Image (cartoon, rainbow over all chains, first blue to last red; front, top):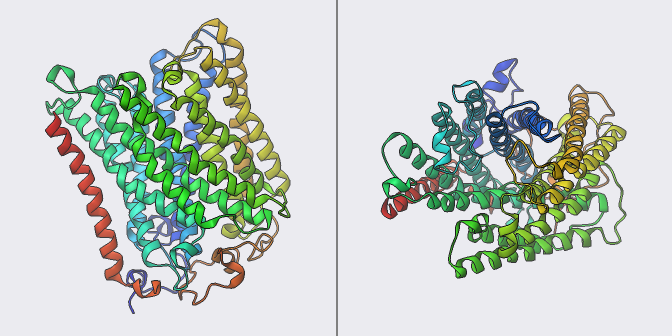
Length: 534
Length: 37
């Protein structure tokens, strides 16, 4: 029987190529996963540097370091780089590394397309970041690119649109690859409901990506034609409707939020059972909860734009639909807590990140329910409360899950245990500083401080100072993470066993550490009982 | 059995379907906007 992977690589049994060819022409899922993860780490620091510029400017009232236009460029680019360059590629990198290992497949189904999906990204971000040096500077109208403001962007505008198209293309190809791999290449014994939760979360995320990335591409294509080809999709002067852009954008934008959090749910569902030494509570209900969240994510988009004006029935629909998301999310939080109930728990670094995720992501969830309430949201709109809300979802939510995943699986990738003491120090510094940075933003927002401004009234001075100090501490703490990762990659630390942890579930723990270049060339006929989930 | 589906044709068919859906959504949203505009 021919296989897609075997057809591509009839040279199956050699090891990796030498030098740059190994990376440039990579078709191995582990190499491509590594490149995605390293790329996202670099982007985390690029976007983080922009965050430091923002927090330096906001350290005190008045203008101290940058002019307002450059400040706006920083807020816009920080968001684009973090969302499309750091968080999403990190999850795709984790999927590349782990999905084939978890389902017993020899590689991704379409290895050459996998190579293309990755290598598009450095070009897309080179184009995006090059706009910082163009006349008129980088895009400064916010990552949402609302017209007519975004049409005032200088020479950067077409480059922005092109880079967004490239990022979307990369994401769609990556998503197709992940779905095709999961649907076609699971071990014979692995039915859908026997799949690990990380694989489930990625399967659903990949469907979301295919459904909404083309919507973003369509929206920015129409921006492009409005700017250069005389159309008036969003231009009121030509009979167009700028609010229609907002509807289209958020029809992409809200599922995008779940694209950045569902894989995090999957990661936490892998980590907590391992360190509670109990099977995941309610495995199937977790699948249904993720599916319900994914469905609801398509019918709540207008809660991002309550203040543009819409019929009362529209407001009520989007308010109640949004609140409904709390139900399946509550199921998940309950299941994770029930998994730990009477478990023989230990608190290694991945578990600490997973636990912090549980508490701090919930804060972001609660403030999400607050902003769903229409009359209250009219007060919160465009304030720092919203900034606090989505940073709680994305930093101690998505980023903490990624950090936890790296600590959890790095021994499998490198064959070396990370330094546990340094890992714990990294966790505590990160967890403390993330709250010092973002918690005060709730107070600032409730007191009326608007977002995306380089200067503010003196009444906001104290909490801005605290938030900036927290941000500097958070940024510096991540240097420790880089040191820990590089140490493992360079082969320092204890050798890791195949299981790494105390009898974890999942096929990935049945291969040696570090995982050999080729794994599961023959699909496992039976999943060992010790490694099944249900 | 899942293992029986590891064929090149199966992989291609799934991938092409998904790509077609993506292209249809892209074109569909622009078309709807043209109709509305």
